[in-house]
Length: 155
Image 1 (cartoon, helix red, strand yellow):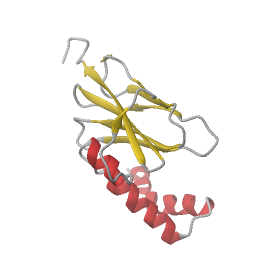
Image 2: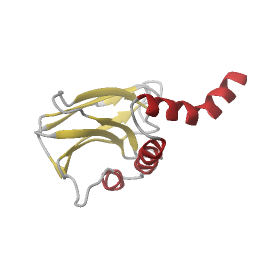
Image 3: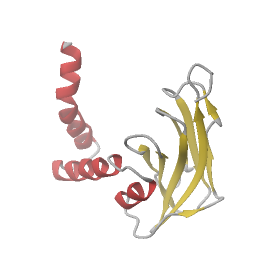
Image 4: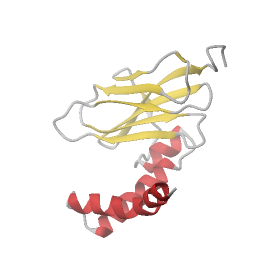
């Protein structure tokens, strides 16, 4: 229990220390944390895009490739990835439509690197999963339905 308490109470200080080691001032770190908080509290694709800076609705793109299984046998660990072939991609996000907080992951893409990410996400139920890419001031998405089964019996 002591370890959990330390992690829970120390997380803010740890984040601030990591931000400082990255060269951010405390004010910049708090601004970044507030921005991320808003994005991760989003309930829809549109809200997530708006929190990332979108002024117009995202547009579907074949140049944004979403890698996700058609069937996930364990909703606790679903491997999802996105690859953007859109020039100037600066952010990639993974959004799970029916999760309580839709935004599952957000990645900043440094200039000169491939816009290709993957991670495990948790899915409470079958849902549409979106890859969302920011390139310049435009946003693009790709979508795929992922069916979550319970014990391999369907869901």
